[in-house]
Each structure stands twice: as C-alpha cells, then as structure tokens.
Length: 129
Image (cartoon, rainbow, N blue to C red; front, side):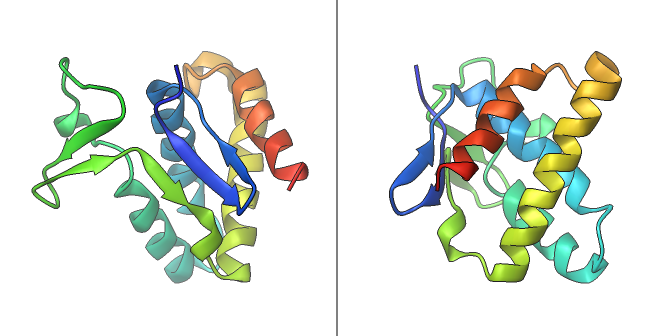
C-alpha cells in the first residue's frame, strides 16, 4: 500500500510503499553530494534527508506513513513536494535520480537493495509530467 508520496507536479505524484520512498530519496540525496555545484546540491541533499528517517531513527514499529524525526523532535509524514524547488534544484534532483538509476543497474545490490525497475518507474513518472 502506498505510504510515501513524492509530488512531482500539480497533477503527478509517485506513491510507493514507505520502504521504496525512503530508499529512492536516500539514493538521490547521496548522489546529490557528488554533483556540482557542491554547495547548492549539499543544501538540497540536506533538505531531502529531512523527509526520511536516518539509520538511528528507524523504528521496527514504524507505521509506514510517518516516522519520529529526532532532528525535528516531531512526527514527519513521508511526503515531499518537488514543485517548490527552483529550476536549478529540479535539474539537480533529476540528474541525481538518473545517476542513482545508472548505479543501480551497473552495481546492483552492492549499491542498494532497491530494485532498479522501481527507480525506472519513478523516472518514467517524471516523463509523464
């Protein structure tokens, strides 16, 4: 059941199970740190990381739709709105997503346990925007 929501545009939302939501954002945040301009992409990576739990925040009783965000001392819904990003941030976000997809295909489980087809579906959702 969908429990994570990535709003791509006003009429287009990718809604995976929470584990897929967390891993997609984790991989994109990781890849953003490698892209130029570094300072801008590090800030974007930090912002994205606020939308999924850290390893320390993972909870076996996680309800799926939200997590206890110890950084904010609050319950955080698994929802991110990409429509608020600037054009430059949006470009960086999707470049990082494509890089993550490439690494998933080439490195497999050495890179992530996320199925590459899942990231492909996410990227295809963007094309329909």
